[in-house]
Image 1 (cartoon, rainbow, N blue to C red):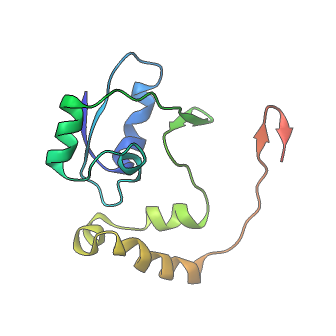
Image 2: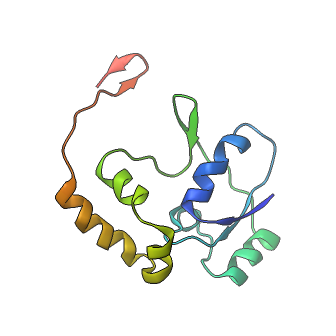
Length: 124
């Protein structure tokens, strides 16, 4: 299966591929492409296609929160608000700089919060 997109695309499809016997080819067409960068996939279309054709398959671990899988990164709070409020239009106009601009705006609006993390029935 070949998917073109960025980290948001990966985030939206990872649930469908968890625990499946499938190879996923990535064409990094997003703004940040953190997932592709982490796997060493070139950010050029030509380079990514070359990896799909000649590269090796990499097994990745997935995280899971409630019933939602994630790959590479999960966030809450400030960074989640920055990602959520970075419009596609702004990202197309400014590229990765859009995140910085939105971060400045969100920094002014952001309010702290607390949370409890449970790992193996132990609260942290």
